Every structure is written in structure tokens, then in C-alpha cells.
Image 1 (cartoon, protein in one colour):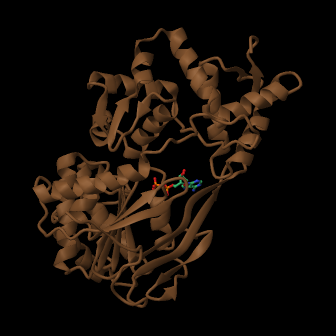
Image 2 (spheres, rainbow, N blue to C red):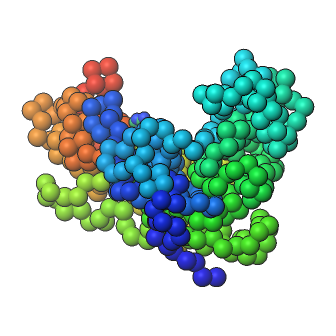
Image 3 (cartoon, helix red, strand yellow):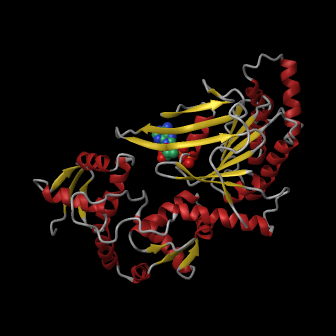
Length: 445
Ligand code: ADP
């Protein structure tokens, strides 16, 4: 199968046609520690009429941020958002949103929850009721208008969410991980429902923008799949999806396409290059990179799972086995890779010879192996050097956080230094006094 990788901007339509268009968007969030986190960097994306666009990527890569910027819910730090060729002012008038957690008002009936979607339209009560009844009918909820959310199943709640989003006849329906809280069968049914509602064209709906971390979901619904990369969030590839409808999850061509997207994602997230130089230079200007926010326990837990499956697993099988978000699984895998215990050739996740050895070793030997690995990582070397040159061999936590922030301005400095602290003290590279918030050298160091 040939995969067409295309430009972030849709190939069709003039600027005035484009429903929503982000040009060179960056977004930086302020952090509690006083630092800044770049969630999106120079992202451009346009939504044309009559298309379904899926944004696919691991947790934290900026999908929700991008969606919210496109519909004017939040402002970008740099770049511009347009709608139909004009700079967007305030909230996009033609867009509506459906959230993962339904976001229904528990004290309102189904009918009144849907009515919220008509707020500010200036319709009479009778006109509202007509529109609500038609929309509820359309999403398969005729007859439950007087029910309260707590009386409904998850799937029905999300149908109410859909009705509320569709009742105002938006041109762009935005769905933020809308089926993640539902069981697999309900999610499949609702996906088909969304496709039907869109393809019927009766609701005035022109395009759909869906955020997901599930490849199958993107392949089932999309005309284009935008694959994002994290830290900072960027568009890494845009793939056009020409599979014919109706799409069958179990068909050969569907599965082939899933595999291809899987390969692109894996290439993006598990590149076959070392994450950190294997032999670090002992210079002050050495490259310092972040370590993922996972515990050593999570990494060893994943290694045990790999061991139970013959020391290697396909990334996506592993993800399914641990039932986590892909982003979380990738973070743990990256942690293991950084420590030389896991490797990721192609789309496989496997134990390295050291990883296998580690699992058989005693606690003391495990710690020794991990400590020697950590000493090879720039960020631990930085902390150890700082401790060596500190007058009393001890440092205030704030000093470490500040040094981390200075070297890695785009990372959440406090979270990162907490992870460094957690890993280092577990293997006794250094001590940490949690009451005084002081790092210190180990007596024997
Ligand atoms: P995704 O939808 O892909 O999971 P998000 O857009 O929610 O990603 O978040 C992208 C990054 O920005 C994450 O690191 C997240 O922690 C951070 N972030 C999101 N919203 C805020 C906020 N309001 N304040 C600070 N950081 C935020």
C-alpha cells in the first residue's frame, strides 16, 4: 500500500473556504515552578469543508491544546488562527465540542442538557423544543428526553453530548477523545454513528475534527490523519486516508493501513537512534536531556511483563496488555531504553541482554547496575557534579530545580528533578532529606 504523506494544509479549497486554520501556532504554558512549558511549537493545520480530520498522538503532545486553539477557546502564544480566511476573534461561531467525560449537567434532564447547545441563539421555546426533539431522534435518543444523566449508560450519555453539540447545526464538530470512557463495543457503535451523522449531511455538518490516541479510531473515521510528536508538540506527518466506506475493522486493507500508521507512529516515538550518547563526555557543556516521569518500579514492572512474553512484544500489543494510554506506555518504554534495559528495534519492545541479566540479579546488583547507568546520563552527572562542588556536599532542592530549568527550559523542571531524585536515591547515588528538602552526597561517594 502506498501512503500519501501530505502537507499540513489541506490541498483543496481556498483560504476563504477553510473552516479553521492554524498558522505557525506555538503555545507556552506557565508552570507552578515559575518555568514555562512549550506545549506546541510552530504547528500549522487547516480544516477544509467536507472532511474528517483525526489528530493522533501520545498523551501530552498537545492535541487538546491545538483543538482548543483552533476553536478559539484558548489563545496561542504565537501564530494566528483563521476561520474562512478571517482572523478568528473569540470563540469559533461554527464549531462545537464533545468531551471525553460527557460534561453533562447532572441536575438537568436530557432535553435541557441538549438545550444548553442552543444558548444565545434567540429561539422561542417551541423552536428549541422542535430542534431538540429532532436531534435526539437523530442520535437514537428519542423518548428519553425527560431522563436525567444518572439514569443513562455511558454510551447514552455520550449520545446526549453529541446531540448537544449538533443541535446548533455547527459546521465543524470537534471531538476530544470522545469514546475513551466507553467500552469497546459501545465505542465502535458510536464511531459508526458519528460517521453516519456526518455522511448523511442532513445536520448541516461540514467537517469533523477528532482527537484520539487510538490508531483504529483514526483509520475508521478519517480522511486525513495528523500525527503529532511530543515535547514540544509538533505535526510530524499528515497522512491521507483513501480507504473506501463502509470501513471494516477486520478487513485486510483496514489492518494494513493500521500497520502503516503504526509504523509511522513508532518511527516518530521510538526512533532507532540512541536517546542519550552512550559514552558521555566529561565536559561541562555535555548534552543534558530529560528523563521520563516514570518510577523505576514501573520500568521493572514492564520488564517483567516482557519477560513473561518471551522477552519481547509488539509495542501496541504491550500497550493493550497494560491497558494504558499509548503515551504512558511509551514513557515507560523510553525510561527502560534510557537505562539500557529495553530496546526498540522497529516496532518491537524487547529486553536487552543487560535487561535480562537485571531481572535475574539480586536487589544490590540491580541497584549497582542502575547506578552505573544513571552515572552515564547527563542529568545525573550534572547533579553529582553540583553535589561534588557544593561546600557541604549538600544542595537545596530549589538549587537543583533551578539548574534543571536552566538546562532544559522546555521541561517541567520540578517534576523532572523529582524524577531524578526518585531514581537516584532508590539506587543510592545520593541522599535526599524530604523534610529539609536537601540533596546530599552519599557518605561513601
Ligand atoms: P494532549 O491532548 O495531547 O494530551 P495537551 O494539549 O492536553 O496534550 O497538553 C500538552 C502539554 O501541555 C502537556 O504537557 C500538558 O501538561 C501541558 N498543559 C496543558 N494544559 C495546560 C495548562 N492549562 N497549564 C499548564 N500546562 C498545560
